[in-house]
Length: 220
Ligand code: HEC
Image (cartoon, rainbow, N blue to C red; front, top):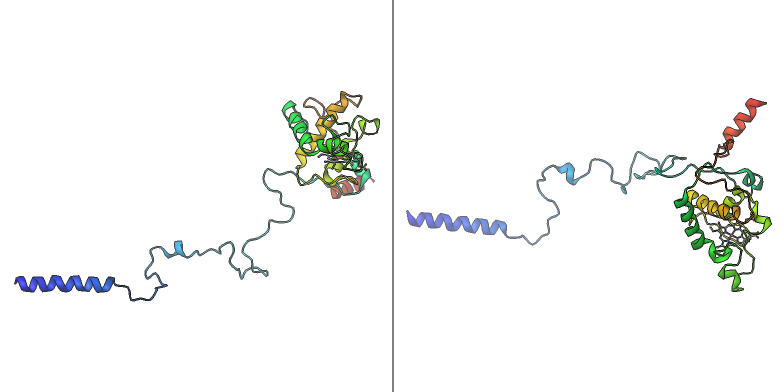
């Protein structure tokens, strides 16, 4: 009886041992899978090809005209349309914190040329390495410049000055301009109109050109 038992146990151990031995081949199939749709996605994965679209891409672009959450509406300014620059404005109004931020950004991005005193004598120009004189914001020529023209300069650049659209988003550009305008108001410029308590513009210049045309027709 004991002999049979030990033979049985021995053969059992042998079988288990042999079965657990690797055959030497690498197995690519996992055998049975619990919940296979967790391993193999039934939806199209982001970078897999997709027969439902002509370009066979699963990742789709956002719908044209879509604006990401937290981002602003486009301003409809056209580069070079200097007439539109003059009347372009914003309904944004800025508190002291935002004006301080405007100064900080100005000193980072504009001060090198326009000078932290806004007199056009920034270190780059003063060093003689930059040929073109940056705008002196204390000069009567710029004291009364419209905010739209300033915005356009920051967005598209002006002659030797490059565009700052990639460094400053629209709100940051307006904060910088508000800072310049507040500074100018204290140095012989017009009364500061972009402060928190100032009135918002009546005319909506942010309207799309299409809408402006529709309204123009209506009034004709
Ligand atoms: C690399 C030097 C440089 C930097 C940096 C620079 N500017 Fe200028 N900026 C100039 C020069 C030069 C002019 C004069 C352009 C002209 O009229 O030929 C100018 C002109 C301007 C004008 C007048 C535009 C006009 O229509 O006459 C404004 C407004 C202005 N800059 C704002 C800014 C702001 C805001 C920044 C920072 C975001 C900035 N600039 C950064 C060089 C610079």
